[in-house]
Picture 1: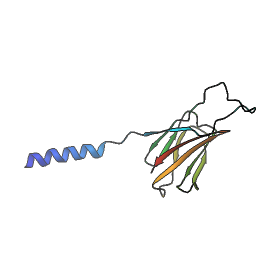
Picture 2 (picture 1 turned 90 degrees about the horizontal axis):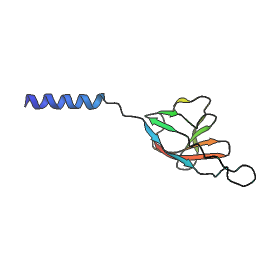
Picture 3 (picture 1 turned 30 degrees about the vertical axis):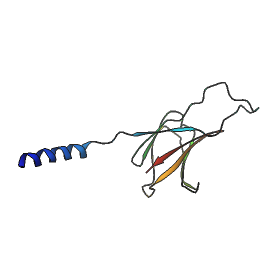
Picture 4 (picture 1 turned 45 degrees about the horizontal axis):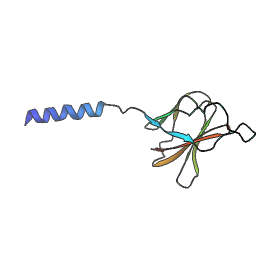
Length: 116
């Protein structure tokens, strides 16, 4: 019995020590950008790369110069920030639930979903 409890304690301690890896936030274009004359651009669209770890949103490639916003189920903006530099963005810990995340970059808008 003592050996079983010891093994259980070690397993529980190891599980608590493991930090979850950041989760990739999948966002895709919701507005098809054009080049001003109604035609699609010839260059591929750079999809923004975002990761979330708890309340920390890591903004990477394709987010510089973008506005990131969270919308609630009624499409109200509950959080918004402009990305001046690539790096971590701390989200308010008062938010909880599932939100639509939008990355707005010029005429391009990308949308996905996150759960806090």
